[in-house]
Image (tube, rainbow, N blue to C red; front, side, top):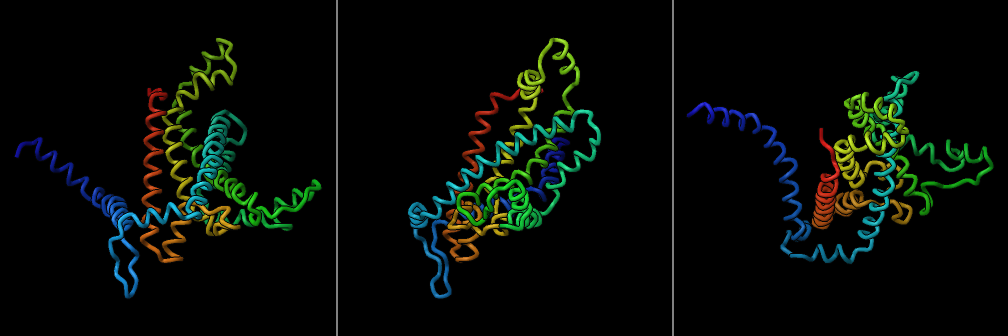
Amino acid sequence: MTAYQRATVHGWLLLLPAMSCLALFTHWPAVASIIDSFYSTPRPRRPSRFIGLDNYEAMIADPIFWRALVNNFWFAVGTIPLSIGLAILMAIWVNDRIKGQSLVRMAYFTPTILPMIAVANIWLFFFTPQYGLIEQVVQLFGGNATNWLGSGDTALFAVIVVAVWKEAGFFMIFYLAALQGISPSLGEAAAIEGASRWYYFRRVLFPLLMPTTLFVLINAMINAFRMVDHIVVMTKGGPDNATILLLYYIYQVGFSFWDTAYAATLTCVLLALLAIIAFVQYGWLERRIHYR
């Protein structure tokens, strides 16, 4: 065996543990879900049998699935731009030389390190009708009491606020790291040329942040479709399915109704949606990214 062959075998052996875990806990569950979606759910006296596309036909006729899909769309539209925009603003703010810079950074990042269940319980106190912190502030200025999580008009908006508060600080870290990698001489040259701060951000800073934006955008999209903890604690999909999201519906079908085959079908649709969105994002943004 030549030195090149030994090096190749050695490299594959080093990758083998990670590849085995990836195949066992990521690839195989995805393949198993695709297979299970073509079978019926096994029962104590009725074994699983091949039913073809019946689960997919039932999904198309399921109004709750479409409600969850629409809710997830609006949830993504509400959380992704807001969390990314706030992350950029916070990163620019804490990247400047301001008083208490370390404390401000810690304050922005603190929601990220809190467990999601703890975050949901904190915001439950904020949204409590009549006694919650938000209600106290609203009533202080003469506003009317609102059941934020109990009304179909405001429940999804309330969940979006919690998600943005949780994620913006996490995305800020990536933008802060990217900003610290940009040479200050670019800003100095722009100032000498008389460019405004907005023009410098729009023409110089933001294009240089596009690789980070692509990474953050993919993560934000995945987070928007894997939200389940906050829903379980705060609303359980209510009221009247106003906050039911696709992953929570999968959880409900699989673990509350014990219809594992239908849950596998919904999982396949979710994976397909994420794959399509990722391909579109990479194909559209890759041409607009300036790598250094």
